[in-house]
Image (tube, rainbow, N blue to C red; front, top):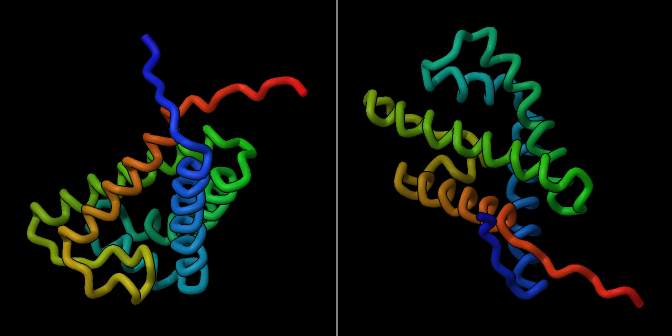
Length: 146
């Protein structure tokens, strides 16, 4: 059984643009401060420092490439799948950190997100995941030949 639904094209375009812009912006912010991002990753106490440092250099570029894929439609479903995986892992890491009593900021949007609460971050992340799932499930109508 295949689940699909249709939305107006402008709604799909808005969701795609919002998801893409969010990940492109988040990746770009982190590219300019990989050491700070490595510290943010290390603050979760889930990975060794060497892994956190490597991720800090590669994850921002992956976010940008996947955001561009979603925006322009090239390797679209692959970009959605990677972004869904990244956001799911981040949500899980945030919940684990919170249950362990760690009071950390994610660092996803640089200093702009430092003052947001855990609930606010979780709501944003769940909204992004919902948008990605929505885009994955949407079946756009086939174009009629001219």
